[in-house]
Length: 240
Image 1: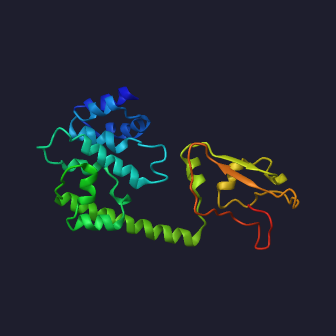
Image 2: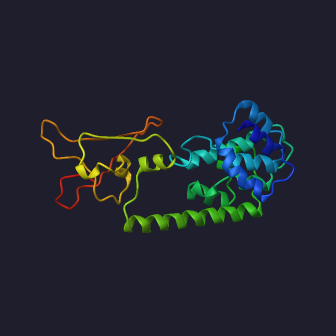
Image 3: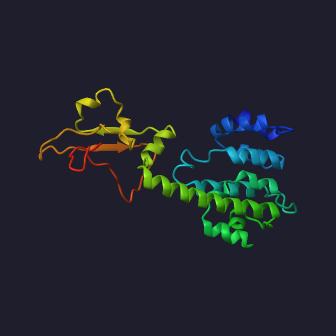
């Protein structure tokens, strides 16, 4: 993976086919200190390609996408450490998913207050006409996303955090005290699907209460609430 990153950094041209290849290869790279020193000496367009597609943490898009983009801005700033007399190029804009930042932060930047982003970069950043358009687009995307989420939530129940872990290939473990006979052929991960109709524990005694355990050894979850669908009907006593 490190050899692939070196090739991306040394490429003389970055046609569309190279960019598509980067989306597959670069997320597998673990960025070491020696590799980052190499990034700092590469052409700006190559740096953007690398920083844009690096997976900074296994869960950067699941738990806190804003934190991931903050890290990307810090990496871009680090690549400029020895270039104090060079202005920030507009191509750096392409490395960041701006729509993950709070609306208030984007609004402030649109009206000229870039301090939030400048602190992450570690240097001043003059807002260009292109940056202004990107900020407007990011605000619009946040509005569209909010409208879509509200619409979807009103129509259908949504999968939870552990379902997202599973989608990312993490090791989600599920255990039940007992299970219905109709579940014999079903994988336990169907518990994470909100549309599943048949799933649950058997009726147990007060001395042996039913339980369902869901865990993921690769993460630490500090839950503020836990939701579980109830029964097959309004008066049902089995969880599905």
